[in-house]
Length: 85
Image 1: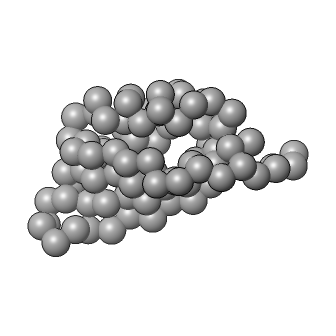
Image 2: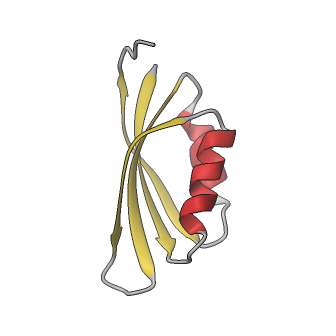
């Protein structure tokens, strides 16, 4: 299973995290780790997320960037890791 690290910059809204997680789930990705921090401007957040799937991360990235309040999505790196069930 391939792991991908994403960096997402978004405007802070109470529902933005739920929207991002819903898109991740609907696109067939599993969240492995996630870290969210406020940016210097009070209304922006940065989310660092590691997701895993056999699917292309480009599809997930393009769908996340279409979300209202998401300013930027960057793919940081990709690693291949065996995940045992």
